[in-house]
Length: 74
Image 1: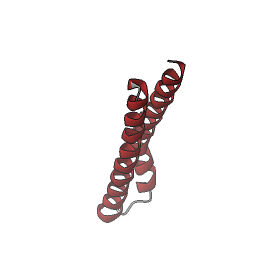
Image 2: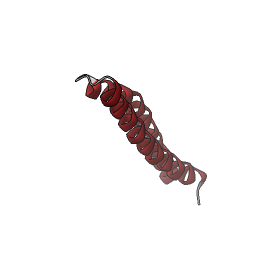
Image 3: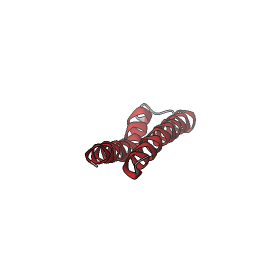
Image 4: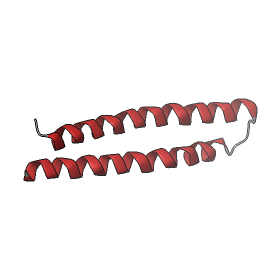
């Protein structure tokens, strides 16, 4: 298997793992805000926490796509 294809698959797996971690982290932040503060802004805080994960996941998927295209050219 081509090294670029392997890196592309690895990058896709990393994006999936990051998605799971993001879901867990956002759920924990949301539940902690509901439990201790009881405020209505907890959903907004959870979304703000998710933004950094979304940016990293998108960058990982773009990297995976570019590596896959590079493997097809070679």
